[in-house]
Image (cartoon, rainbow, N blue to C red; front, side, top):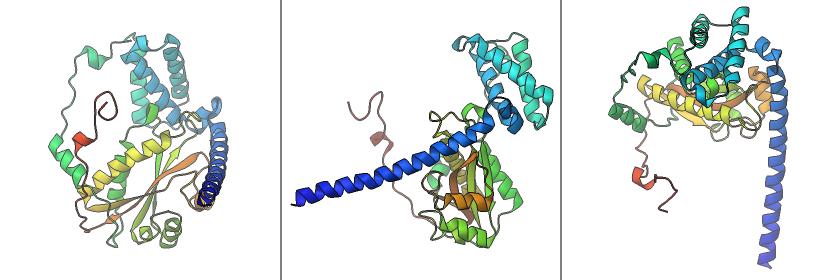
Length: 310
């Protein structure tokens, strides 16, 4: 009898999981299809010329380094697109325009496979941080949940944003945006929608939300890229905060499943329908001491070529 009960119980569990999965995937597909509408054809140039230029310049730069790895029409299309954006000139930061023109000029000068930096044998800059110092910082990093009631300064917010934007970005799209939630009632609301964080996020001086403009990502191939990039940015923020006397705690908070009342969150925070929520952090001054967290030995976690000891 117990065997039958187990079979029934397992089946019911499977049905519940399947229903949740179908509901979440339908929500995800609907979102990406709606977001994609703003990034098809000429709409891309109109809605986000800066991202378009970054991506196309990145494509052309990759071609210059290794032209034999790409069809020649890749470079022709990219250069044509770059010229189209530059001729319009609207919504492009000066530094980005300068970089795009530099890459375009190198392509037109016939420098395929001969990037000036390579031709001039430019040396890679030496890191200002010693490997052992960086390793010590990474090992010192902790999740802190007790904060001092001191608002973040504008300089701290700027530094945090700069750290996030320094993280790797697929095709140089640079899709991340940051929302610093500090207003008490709004902070309480956001905190209540964070699984595993609602108990203490509201007590932090700031809840930081990272959102990503996901409209240009290919669906379903790139469906995880916004969240991967958000994770890289979170680690950058963690390390920076560790050096600034700020505490961080990463909340389980991503679109399509782990944001309670996501539609309400989007409405209250005015998050566009082309952007996904990729991470949340409680941030603020913290003097909390967190015990050392044991980690496994490195030699127990890596092998060469194959998993395990095969």
